[in-house]
Amino acid sequence: MDIIKKYFPNLTDEQKSAFDKMLHLYPEWNDKINVVSRKDIANLETNHILHSLSIAKFIKFTPGSKVLDFGTGGGFPGLPLAVMFPEVSFHLVDRTGKKIRVATEIANACGLKNVTFQHGDVAEVKEKFDFVVSRAVMPQADLLKICRKNIDTLHQHNALPTGLITLKGGDLQQELKSLKSDSKVVPVSNWFDEDVFKEKSVVYTEA
Image (cartoon, rainbow, N blue to C red; front, side, top):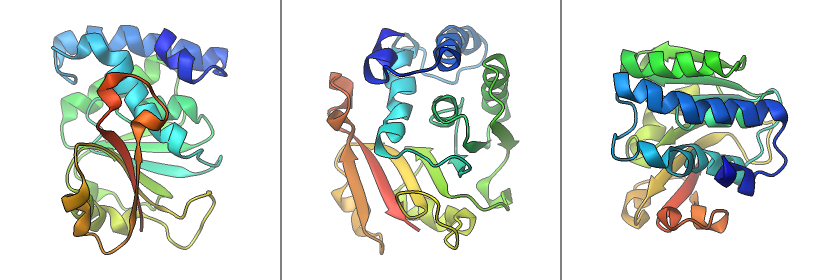
């Protein structure tokens, strides 16, 4: 867990314990249900947990905020963010039941009380959230169109207006051209030194 602690030196004992459990539980579950590429599971701490936590470097969610993780898979970025922000509510949604099962089991084992789960499509989610987060699920414009109904634009509690925050890789210039709203693109390498993050970005679009 040295890499996580390197960038987040002020973790509580509870947070350290939760991340430590994740690092042990994901490889065990991955042997049964593939939620992370088997070639990449050895890089779990950097490529998945730390990558998810780049959102925590981008924005400090205000206590009481509500965040929807769309297409969470096995729990990324939602579960690492739930550890980092224990006073924020996270709702994780995915179409694949097996992956939601893994995320649920890991959340329970880590003692996370601020996470709920839903097996299904985001179209079935009726609640409103301050932010929707997602990790390379689909183009930003398509994702915003689908989840805009779930973003609460009336109540603003955070340093940034409510909107969509995604983790993406590569050249995003063409993809973001189709957005009517301006997007903020911040390289993950602004916060983390590892080579894997050289072409990774946090992308924020106001709803």
